[in-house]
Amino acid sequence: LYEFDRSWVITGAEGRPTRQVTSLYLKDNSIEVHNWKLAEKYRQMEREEVLYEHFMMDDARHVVIAFGTAARVAKTAIQWARRNGIKAGLFRPITLFPFPSEQVREVVASSETVTVMEMNTGQMIDDVKRSSEEHDKIDFYGRPCQLLTPEEIYEVLEKKSKGRAIDEPARTGSEKGL
Image (tube, rainbow, N blue to C red; front, top):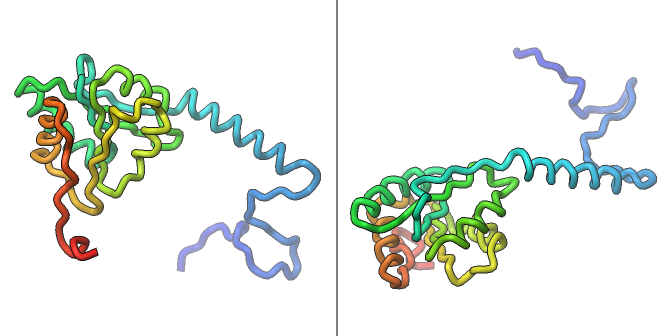
C-alpha cells in the first residue's frame, strides 16, 4: 500500500474540524474580493505568460493558425508551399489559456488569408475570430479525430494563394451517415 498525505481528503468530520474543497466564498463580500483577485491574476497571466511561435512568418501572406499535432504537420506543408513560391507561415499558440489574442489580431491584420487548422470540429476558431474583426479573412479547416496530412494542408494553402475557396475535408468512416 502507498502512503500519502491524507490531510486534504474529505471524509467524515468525526473528531476533527470540517474540511471543504471549494472556491466559493459566501460570507460578507469575500466572493467579490476573491473574484477581483482572480481577474487580476488572469490579466497578469495575459501580460506575462502568453506563449506562441512564429514559423516562416516574416513575409507570410497566407497563414495557418494551428496548435499541437496539426501545427507540426502544417510546418511540413508550409515548407512545401514556400518551395513553390507561396508565402505561407504558421502561427502556433502554445498557451491556449490565456489565448494570445493580441498576437492573433496582428497576424490577421498583416495577412491576406488565415486558415485555422484543427484536428477537431473547431475548438480554437472562435478564439481566433474573437481576436480580430477581419472575419472575412479567416477560414476553418478541421477533421475531428483524424490526422491532417501535409498534402491536404498544402492543397488548402495553394487554393488560398490563388483566391479560391477551400473545400471541407473529406469525411471518412461512420460520420458520413450522420
